[in-house]
Structure formats: C-alpha cells, structure tokens
Length: 231
Length: 293
Image (cartoon, rainbow over all chains, first blue to last red; front, top):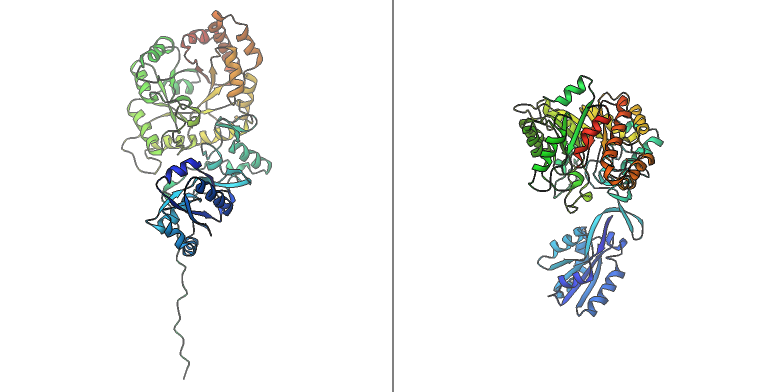
C-alpha cells in the first residue's frame, strides 16, 4: 500500500490560512491503514481545526480516493458540505489529493499527508519499502528479494563493497544489505546459479513519468450473421 | 598506450599510486606531489573521482593534467553521478584526451558525502559500466549505435577481499571480468592470510590483481577502519606497531608496514596499488622496504 504520514498540523494551518470553512476528506484504504485518513483521524482533525477557529463543513472517508468511481460517490453524498467549504483538506496519498482535486476543480484542495513509498506494513506504525513499481521485475532471479528497491544503490549484479560482516549496509547500518539477503537465500536453496549471469541495465524507456496503463482492448467475438433457417 | 597494461602483460610486478583532486581550482599541490614522489616510481597514478561522494574537481581534468606532466593516469569513473549517456560520453572524452587506463566502479552513495540531498543516479552498475567501455571499444555504444572512431581502454575494476562473506565479492568479480575487466584493484588489505583466501577463491578468474595498500597513519585510523569501513580489518599486531611508534617516526613505521605487506603478498598477486592519503612522500620508502625500488 501507499505509506504516508500526516504533515505537521502547523503546516496545514499555514496552508489554509485564508480559508474559513474546510471540508475534510479521508480514504478508506491506505490512509485509513496508516492512521492518517480514517474516520477517527478526521474526527480528531475536526476538533483541532475547530479549536484553531476553522469551521469544518463536513467529513468523508472516500471509498478509495484514488478510484474515480469512489470520488464520484463520495462527492455526490457530500455535495452541499463541499460546496459550502472554501477548501478541502485531503488526508490521503498524493494520488488521492489529485484525484479529488481534478474532479472538484476549481475547488482548492490541500494535501494533508506526505506520501512516503509503496510499502509493506510490518506492524502498525512500522513500514518498509520492498518494491519500486518499476515494470522490470527481477524477483524471479533473486527468489523474491528486490535489489532495485532494497539495495541503496539499486545494484543488479551483486553487492558493492559496503556490507558489514553482519550483513548491514554502510549507508544505513539499520538496513540489511539486499545482496547479502539474496546471496544467503539463494545459497540455502541451491539457487546461486540464478544470479551467476550478468543482468543487463534496467530499461527505463517503458516507464517515464507520468506513467499510464490501459488494458488492451479485448477482442470481441465477431458477431456471426444468424444463419437463415432453410425455408 | 598504457605502461600499466604492458607491464602486467609482461608479467612485471606493477605498482600504481593515487591522488585526490582538490575541492576547488587549486590543483598545483596535488600535481606537484605526484611529480615529486610518484613520477618515475609508479607505473600509473589513479585519480579518485568525487571520493566518498564529496564534491571536488573531476578526475578527468586531473588525469589530463597528469598526462601533460609525463605521468600516466588511471581515470576513475563512478556510476553514482551520471546516467549511461554521460558515462559513455566521458569515456569517449577520456580517450580523445589520451587517457587509456580507466577504473570502472559503482561509487559511494551520496549519503556518505557532503551533498546528501543529491539524487543518486546508479543508472548503470559497475558491471554495466565495464560492458559500456567494452562496447565503445568494439565500435558501438550501449544502444548498439555505431561510433565514428572507437577508443582503446585498459579497463580496471575493484573488489573487496576482506568482505565477509567473501563469496558475493567473487561472484561479482567474475561478472566484471566476463564484462571485460582487464585488471583488479582491491580495497585496502592488511591481512595477507585473508588476501590469500580471496586469491584462492578467485582462482580461475584470469585477470591480474593489484593488492590495495592504504598507508596506515595511526593506531586510531586502524581502529576507525575496523569499526567503520566494511571489508577492512587491521590485525592487532599492525595496529600495535603504529601505537608503539613515537610520533616523529610514524611515517617511517607506516612505510615499513606497507612495504612488509607488499612483500608478503607479492607472490599472490601481480601488483600493488598504493593509497597514501596525502602522505605521498612515503612512497619511496615503501618501495624500498618492499624491495621494489
């Protein structure tokens, strides 16, 4: 999921300095799981913003703020409260902020979170990045450990010289060297041959910003002309 | 032409040195040190490139300045700061400036240096960079486009013999040589037994190895490296020699330690790369002690 954290409250107030009335938007997915944009957090924010002199016209935890349909449904349900607000504070990821903002143009939206990375929830409040969503997956080669993401240099052909005897990365001794993880896993499984060959450079040509993806159009079965019944 | 290539091909024990460009335009002191202490004593002088990710004058310019002073340079190229267009372009630039020896390495992460806010590039890794240099020599670029004039390089790579576990280093070295590396320069080695184990593990990888000798300036430096520098272990006996040395004798003892290490490891490798960290004046003493002068 998208891992995020709330921006400092004072930064939110500064961004909304000229707005008197605010609508609070959350999201039912990642933002709820990260405890930044669920109903509980929106209620707490409503309290703090009211204390700070703002009028909160309403709140909505959108059913997936990065889904156009989810935005439409939420907006329909809360149209009056949104219309009454000077701006919307969106407690969701950057995609959620834009998904709402683009659809509610010219209503001002304020991002309420920092989107950190696509990550795994190890436990509530502890998140790690494992995938860079790069369109060039090498997890088959490494038996499921991504060096593009988990090596600080994104090296594809083995480690640099910067790992310690306990398998940590010199860039951050709290972090594991991805290549030592890969080496140990492959060695234990007798799979070291999978990384023996040279892995070529990453091909960036297929995933430049802004990325988009559309399902190929399914081939529709050609309608057959109904055969005329023999008279 | 590369004297370094010729010496290694002829089976002569090859010694190289190293200088670091300044942070700024004041290049004379480093060049003068190289002229005074390295010229005529080492086959080639490696010029570090933005070492430990600290912004400095570039290796390429310093290499050319060395060449103009009659010193054969080794141009260090790191993957941290440039994408594949710039890396290939700089390799071609080196060739037209008369530079043949290149050391092709990944480079330290930007977080280790003085611009931690910078975007780390690592578009290519060291294996890819070696492939790129080999491709240019073959007359085309990494994308397969033909070149109008192809360069010639003597391509070096690095390895860290002291890394634990060692096997991943050997696996990677194998790929570097498969990609076209023609010599190996190692991370600092202070333990000949450990180095011997590495050389044995790398048996079958048919490429000359220059053992890395970093001049130990103090016992404190040894303790720092043991604690902070992955893959470098200074044995207690060596640390003690520095600790026992009176301050005025430190350079002398440092040269003895380095010379003794080279002598011990000479039978296991094809050359030595001296990293003096500014103490270039100890090079003659090191070579004398190693019986190479």
